[in-house]
Image (cartoon, rainbow, N blue to C red):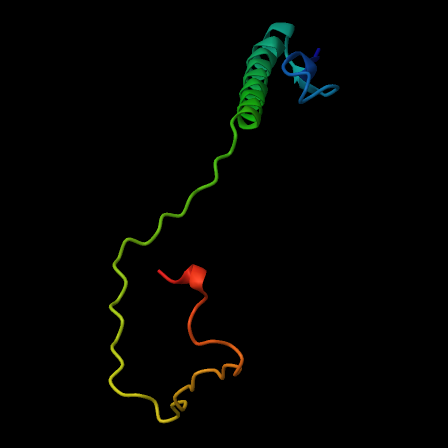
Length: 115
């Protein structure tokens, strides 16, 4: 006679926020005895429960820790020295002339501005 054993893991018991309705079934088909079936299923169930607890802990830690943006540090190498201009370009602009002043304005500042 062959024995079948199935165990159901309720993931809601591990973390209700992450897995509100999920379950997982583990089982053995055609074992020679109940004892042999349970010797195979029990360690597998314990391993899966440990896996889901570690996964829930990792998810919860990732949610609580704020992600800090990685700051790029400025390059600490000195900037190259500017090259001096040795000659004026061929298309230089003509010198500027002072703006024209109207004839009715005085060339001296007002009395309140004189020191």
